[in-house]
Image (tube, one colour):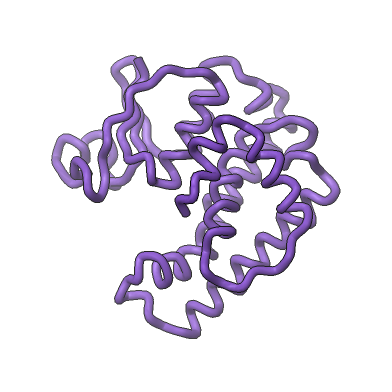
Amino acid sequence: MLTILGKSSSINVRKVLWTCTEIGLDYRLEEYGSGFQPTSTPEFLRMNPNGMVPVIIDGGQNLWESNTICRYLAGKHGRTDLLPAEPMARAQVEKWMDWQATELNNAWRYAFMAMIRQSPDHGDAAALVASMAEWNRLMGMLDAHLATAGPFVCGEALTLADIVLGLSANRWRAMPMVRPGLAAVDAWFARLSERDGFRTHGCNGLP
């Protein structure tokens, strides 16, 4: 059975859990991370030298990086609806997944650390304002795309791009900050909320 190491409150672990729900995979979740088993032990660091969750163990091998794990699971189980086989269609999905991991995550990191984690290292008011502004700007880019591409990020069907971006959108909506009205994002979020996997692991009140 697939083993997932990580805590169910982690945004990146929840990507993997939602993907498993879409595929219909059985798995065993072992809780690792803050408040649970540590990720700093030599045993864990041999599996992921970054000391971060999630990590999966499948067939005696381990894999880390949440977006990569999602791609692996979709590919292994032949879910070409979630990750197309045709090169351009696949690249469109992976483009948005990469954008989520690089541009969007980098935009919200300072605001999240300052406002939710209350990190003493993130007390610069100007940097906080800049982070929120960039986060809103990038969500506006997603909104403009969804307004023409919909109903999902890459067209008519849900893909891995929706899974990883859906978790990010949930975090954005949960943040105690001023946000612009984004009608296309709101409509897309409502469509995601019709899915069991998103209700359980995505739109569950955890930023």
